[in-house]
Length: 484
Image 1 (cartoon, rainbow, N blue to C red):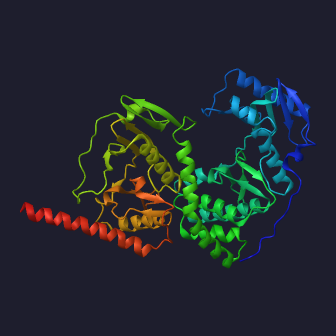
Image 2 (cartoon, rainbow, N blue to C red):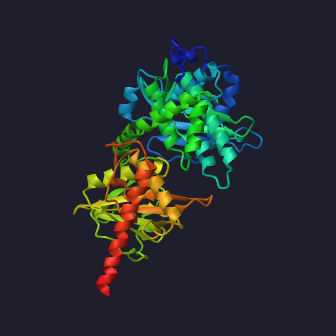
Image 3 (cartoon, rainbow, N blue to C red):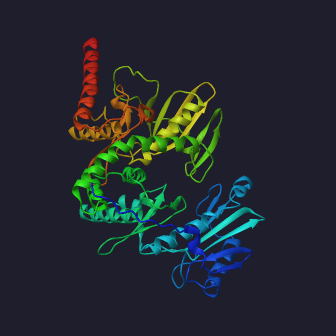
């Protein structure tokens, strides 16, 4: 494999802002980007603070984070303002450290020094009570000629050549970032902005969960690449290989090595993501809230009203199949999938975390909306249902559905151990905007993430599905014989 030339940066990232100008505006201590004077930045900062004080719309309603967009962009620049609040304990823990805003500004300056084009914030500010950190601010200029990769990836009618160009540009950008020493926990498509040019320009953003290190080792590189690839839904094997080849600077042998390495690392990365979700997914936050609905308690997405989940069921039972070996059942409920079964509140939280993991990792499962549990060990979970969705059991005579389901099982078995008795009724097949088919798993806990994971084999996945569908046909035939 091609050797990677490490670059060492002995100077601390925080010292990069030592030459930056400092000032106090509105009772907030500000540190400006290098080359920016307080006279030039003061009008923009004062206007931002005035708009927030006058009740500007908060675009991110979280426990500690706020996001504001100031300005129209017509005759004046549009500013994005990120505000982070610290509770009493967290503020004391940060008393000897810089705030997230200062760190994000320092990382952007460090990457600029290393020749990487990143959006540079205007200023970072913080307020303290004594040594305790109370709040921090980051002001960025909004770019109007770019879009994040995740939004572009899900657009309808995108040609294969454009996607290939995006993938190649993303691979080059990821390699440069890693060579520059960037270690980013949320290395995901939504943290990359793309500007349509020749060649494609890729701008990394959002360094809130990042840091600069002396070097990024192979293990950390592999983990970030794995996480990035798994978040790209509908990415073909050719696109993933093209990304790795761009990352390897055209070295095909190195790209094949990365391919095997990423496949081996996927179960461990998925297990780490699942552990993080199990810790955080049941807390009140920007996207998730704790809810109570009569005797039921659990969590739901903030943008989902519980009234939408409370209506009567409109669909009857599905086609007949062998007696299930699992207590968890999934049925269509209008525009939703509704799953129900036996389980404690702890098992409901586990089910919710598994559902979020499958959705975030390349849409291997439908989008979970809410998960509730009752004291008598009953639980229910709701998923968003695509209008074209049908179960594999209903489409068992459609060859294309078998191929899509085989791809799903192939990917799932590369992440962990899939329950050998998972029912075709718990695999949904939907039609993509480009006319192709995609399969999703409706029973999240049927996959034991990180357990006995193996290299994916499409032939074994196809054989797995054929055996299950054959059992269904045999059972249907036996029912017809008994009825006659």
